Amino acid sequence: MRQLKIGNVVLENSYVLGPMAGVTDLPFRLLCKEQGVGLICMEMVSAKGILYNNKNTESLLQIHPDETPVSLQLFGSDPKIVSEMAKRIEERPFTFLDINMGCPVPKVVKNKEGSALMKNPRLVYELVSAVVKAIEKPVTVKIRKGFDDEHVNAVEIAKIIEEAGASAVAVHGRTREQYYSGKADWEIIRQVKEAVHIPVIGNGDVTSGEQAEAMRKQTGCDGIMIARAAEGNPWIFSELIAYEKDGTVPERPSVDEIRETMLRHARLQLEYKGEYQGIREMRKHVAWYTKGLHGSARLREQINAVQTYQELEKILTSL
Image (tube, helix red, strand yellow):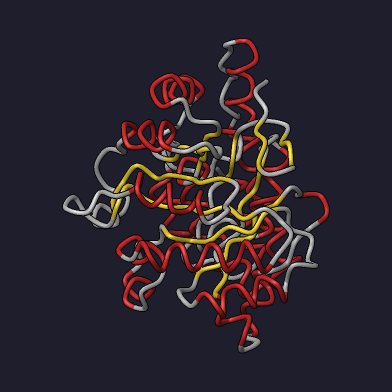
């Protein structure tokens, strides 16, 4: 089993759960950890949210002892604020501090944060170097191929990130303009890997062990980040591990296993978020878990009206 070393930390394997807003919350992360994922990335957290003691930000910072090692991701564009907030929270039990330079959401980009940072190489250096100097923990950065097809600069940005003192870089092979459409460009990941000496984590279009090996072969990447392919599918990590170990492709979980996982997921949601928020957030997860199953379209219609755990359990029992 290939290990992944970032800074002074050696991970058990090289598979990483990518950060996804509204998805990689604590309940879902615990389920992925049970499937053997090497590193868990949390939902992105606003540095300004920490600065102004935003009540919703505190819940995003919650970490369970069972899920470590964990990467906590901050987003922001002011080097002073981001570095000071990184220092403020450094005593929390995360392993790595990640800086978001990949989020394509308009309201984030409009504030010159997320993937908009890739348009300002000088600010990238100032931001990363400020955070590296502010904390002892390893700092990593997640970037995209570029902002758009006219500004494909992942190699340049990765070099700057390395020069600024970061310990690893994750590269999503799509531009901001693409969002999540089209095909991920693995060639840009290879170019970044050849350009820097720090570990490079490849991200984009890996949904199986075969594809993971293909990405490694084409790019030479040190780690593989799985994001959307894990939605409703925490089992992907045990499948990736099994394929790497001996080339086997485990059987997909049965309907009973999927049902029990959904209900466990829902109970975790209730435990950490309460019934009102927890059940409403489960609706999208149930849609992902049941995609492709017989009767899933009708099930999704029913789930969208569910308001209690008992209602959810009753509907899923009939699956």
